Image 1 (cartoon, rainbow, N blue to C red):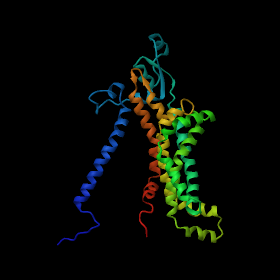
Image 2: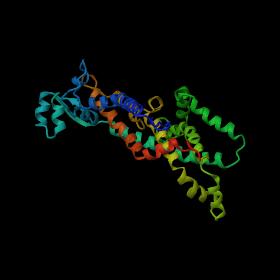
Image 3: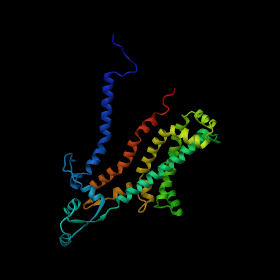
Image 4: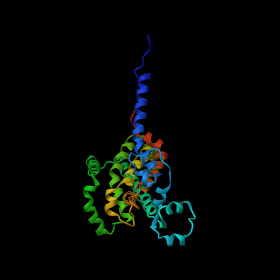
Length: 313
């Protein structure tokens, strides 16, 4: 009679689970891989029907993404001489010359400043508020926490017009400070609630022992609580950054030039015959990299943060 464990899955269950995970991973990654591949297609291959899986790769999409091109007459082409670089040769195929850099670099930098800046402030303010709710007697604490959470339930676009009018009066339209302030306010509710749950899981006896040893309240928070809450803070930072990085509606409404981020800019990339899909795909691919790298660097904290407090001793 073979032994059977109620905790150890059978080989059939392992194969079924593995097959499901592989299938889910393929379905999830397919759109991402298609976007990356489209960035290396020519404009004709990008819109070909049926879609081309096998194609001749080219960097034309990336050249179009980072440069501004203009149509040149035969006399201008002769005057310009032979193309000096590989990207000049790509542009000359369409009887065009490079007039200068595009604005994608500026928009990408705006996304970095606004996304990481708002995430930093949301984490700092959220950690302080979460610690206060967790360790001190706050009047109407439960009601305040529910009010903070309720602000997350409302879609931000629902208050877009009042925010636009308010920003116009305060001179915050199309400014980095205004967008950082807005995204911080939106992410603060998520930050407070997530970090509050993690701090609640840290035994208060650790702080009491530190206070007995002569630590101040701030020293106990900085040297005892904060290191143990690192996993929760890291996972919260990832969620806050993802929202600020990908947000489109408010960025499209409140910015147009100086502080415009990449999401509203990428769809406006126009080629010689309409929408330049390889350049759009190239911009989207590059736009994914910072969040992907940030998540990979914090992946250990993210996994520990998701399961923190799930098993009690």
